[in-house]
Length: 350
Image 1 (cartoon, helix red, strand yellow):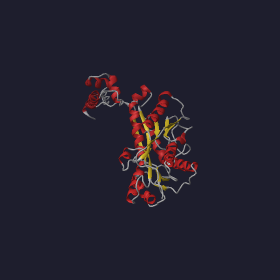
Image 2 (cartoon, one colour; image 1 turned 180 degrees about the horizontal axis):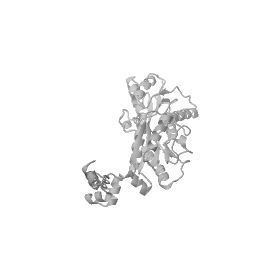
Image 3 (cartoon, one colour; image 1 turned 90 degrees about the horizontal axis):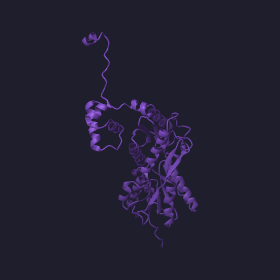
Image 4 (spheres, helix red, strand yellow; image 1 turned 90 degrees about the vertical axis):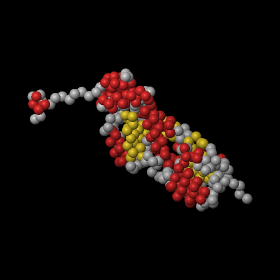
């Protein structure tokens, strides 16, 4: 037994209390309310003040108690998020938008990137998050999981960027069907008799939706859908798949399921000596920053990722804060055609 233990009669002395929020406020020269706002990550505090508060926290060794926050406010101030394949533009842009929207509301985000789209892997990611201190869950893409195969904790507020879950959980998504129809309609309206499709992977819900809409738009115009060529969303896959399109002289118009594959297709067309848009018109989907810098600049369908993120967070927090039942809510974010130089009427044949 140590000397200090003998002096205290063998009993361990209680640990001294750690620094409090008031201690941090006094050292930083601000109010306790300001310390609380900094601890929650709110953007309403001036950068210099926030830096001074964080320095005081570090100097004193202060760590905000998440349990105390939950006890006082009934919330942890954290949103869980499940995403798949963050290297893909749509997922990364949506995740970025959700994080920004959550921070604007004073919430942090805990993210789990799922290795595969299988229901068991998505369910396992949800289970890991549900055991952490989160107020609700945003699933960016459920992929092959369905409301029947995806295991979600009871009573946990959830919102999904997937319309298949409407009736089970609120959903938000871009108008995939309308966007693909607009892309095909634009090319047909220019006078192209047929539109080929560079599709995304078969295990992707947005890819399937865009492909189905492409087929329907052609059928309604009285045109036969040609055989699909398929990529994996990457520019490299667009190039590999696009070489077959570039080698086919019958191809005069292509709707690519995303801008990155369209970029690869454009390279394949250039290498094959096919002029864009003189020989082949190309339309993409997403309107990423790269689209305007390609040669020629790419005509594409713009998705408003920032709006998608805001709506996902809004629907989740309406459940968290107000306990609203939003299971039947489905918000569709409009898309729009951005016309650039990669599309034109087909050359007239002699």
